[in-house]
Amino acid sequence: MTDAPEILFDKRGRAGFVTLNRPKALNALTLGMVRALHPKLIEWADDPDVGHVVIAGAGEKAFCAGGDIRQLYDWGKAGDPMALTFYREEYRLNTFIKRYPKPYVALIDGIVMGGGVGVSVHGSRRVAGGRTMFAMPETGIGLFPDVGGTYLLPRLPGRTGTWLALTGARLGQADAVDTGVATHAVASDRFAALAEALCETSDLDSTLESFSQPAAGATVPGLREVIDRCFAANTVEEVLAALDAETGAHAEWAARQASVIRGKSPTSLKIALRQMREGAAADFEECMRIEFRIVDRVLRGHDFFEGVRAVIVDKDNAPAWRPGRLDEVSDADVDAFFAPLGPGELDLDDTGRV
Image (cartoon, rainbow, N blue to C red; front, side, top):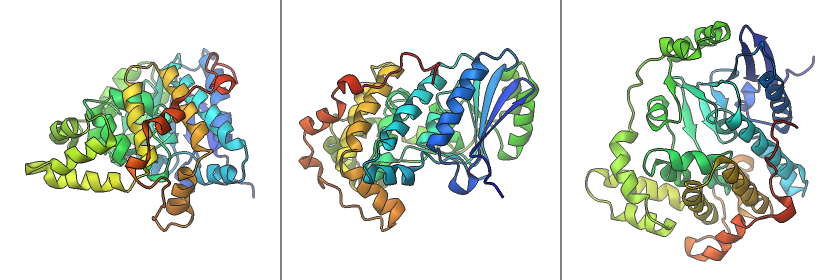
């Protein structure tokens, strides 16, 4: 018996339909999936029979929980250049999706993190189901919010993106719509019917509106003032000081955020905050080049491998970060992650070819 394909493609009516098909692995993105999806999207961009692309995840738990981190860990520990190859090809795919010449509809119901964000949120339309759980938790494994997070997160309302980047906080359906991560909210039990309707329609927006419903229960609007106040600081140390100083109605919430941040990689935290500040003024392509510069250095460092060991391999959830304290990570240390790579820069001149 052969294994099921990791990713499925189907032309249904007006739609090019993509299914991420690793439900037991929460549809985690592999290099093989990236290498299959990118050329298929190029093909469909030039196919007059395809009016739009729809992408969904198999199963009920996840759209896509991120990249195949364990494989990246194994490659990196072995010194295999395939780890960096994965990121190069993934980031080129993310950029092509951002530039995609046809409507691109992501049906997100369940977990969407990391690499899953990169193949969904840069599309023109993002539908959040009732099970949606969006997060960028990379600082907790010694990584950083990538796959276009440098561009996406600073453009969320106020300092919401900085909060998400530093804490890895999760957004449900209502908050995903409120922040602009998602464009539409649809009940989970309507997703199958919506997918069918999207394959037949030539009027995407009317179809999406007919399935959409108001999403109740957003919590971020009630936190926006304290988020903006505490996460506007210029250093991670100042963010923590602001959270520690919070009193009144949001003091308990602020204390929880500070505790979460203190468990993350100090290096990753400082990288992420710099991303939020630099990304706010950069275009998408420059943000992707910045991310590739960072990941090239991260894969040669300590914290990513230690974070994956602690969270995914040994599961002791006790990473020994190096350096272990924020005050041991200098501005010059952070600068080194952002420095140009010279001949090794990410080439985004022609993402319409693979």
